[in-house]
Image 1 (spheres, one colour):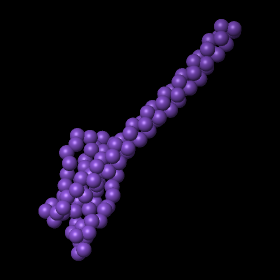
Image 2 (tube, helix red, strand yellow; image 1 turned 90 degrees about the horizontal axis):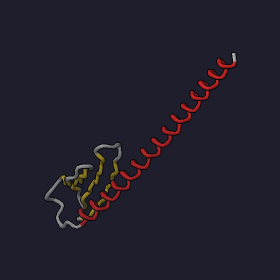
Image 3 (cartoon, one colour; image 1 turned 180 degrees about the vertical axis):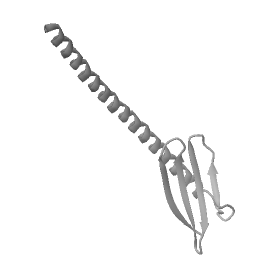
Image 4 (cartoon, helix red, strand yellow; image 1 turned 45 degrees about the vertical axis):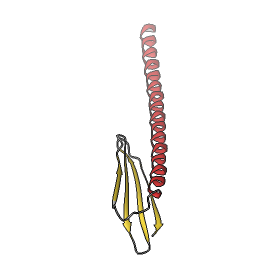
Length: 110
C-alpha cells in the first residue's frame, strides 16, 4: 500500500511540475513575441520618418502618383493625390512577415 501511494504522489508531482513548466515556457514565448513586435514597430516608424523626409526633399510632386522603396522586410509606399491647392501624400509602411502597419498623411502646398 505504501509503494502505491508513493508512486501515485510522485506521478501527481511530476504532472503538476510539468504543467508549471509549460506555463513558464508559454509566458517566455509570449514575451519574446512581444519584444519582436516592438522591434518591428519601432523599425517601421523609423522607415516612415525616413520616407517623410525623403518625400519632402522633392520639388515636383506632379511627376508621380506612387513611390515604392524596395526592402525585403517592409513594404514602403507613398501615394500622391493632387488637390486644388496642395498635394495630399499618404505614407504607408507595412511589415511583410508581421501584422504591423504604420501610416501617415501629409499635405504639402503647391
